[in-house]
Length: 458
Figure (cartoon, rainbow, N blue to C red):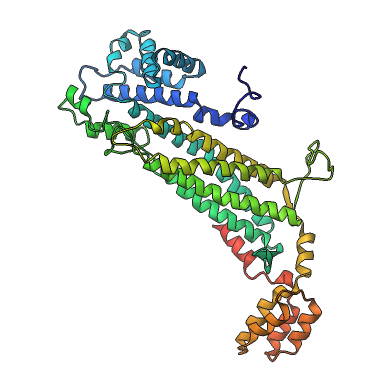
């Protein structure tokens, strides 16, 4: 059976393929091969500009330009050739070396330096740098922009509804009122904090040979300061050098990356459920999309499918991210291969995350507040003012204020007349009594609107 969006095993490459076109450049097998080629070429160029490897010599401007073009113009056709070579060698990194040797054979000056391709490297030197570059680029080009867009949309909602009063629900029960904008700000503030922590995760890499000691490098060029050269090369790629490793970079930073991304996803999973709930309550409506069907049998339905899709994909992503965080930093002695197939799925978790962010973006674009529904719930819940009344009573010296309000309101609903009759009989200052009698549930929002605007102004 031919592979297509219809026959793909993973829905990332099937049902959702059209949404994830940009992600394939980074997280696909092609993306991994491309980064391996980039690493090998950059390492060769780095060695050539160093005086510590005189046999290689400095490359001319024309040769460096040819090497740059080899990296920049690397496409799927070139990756297919690497895969053909892998079919012969049964080794993915060696296939990249052979591919470069083929390409170098086309240029006399490069043909003479083929022996320095993959110089001193173990496969993991190439792979750990390739994966680091993928996660670095995926974060910078895909994940952070998508998160910033979500934060922007949340801010727009918060600004529009900063003063739109609604009933809170603690433990699922009616509680002190808030505003829709303040609740959206709560999400945006959490997301912004986790986004910044994710962006700050340091991405490490190593290039130090078969067991991390520069054995081969030192044997070939004992006078060179290989530790310093390696650090300089890794840093030149925009990565942080990790000097102390076995054959593999220990992946602690990958765990940090995954944990930070998982925390973002947890915030958004929480938000997805909250938006779903507000839609269910009628506090939020969804703009209808022409031609869209909500139910195969109930024609009235407009389901919150975008928030449900996001919730599902966030859960999938976090299940993978948790496994990566627990598994990847653990390796037997100087190296075992159990991390190899696991690392190939890092992009799967990132793609499920990205897909969730795209679904949330679509969902947020559709929602709009229903002030009438929010106000109706508030007007039916005068008992939520019991908190205000008993607190003012405490200020006036009533030690049993809480107990009095509890006896009147706990587990029962009251209307305005019942509460007002109670307030009129209170022994409290006239100004406080007047203020409480004027208070309505929709007014009892504290500093919610002010707090929302404060965040938006930051």
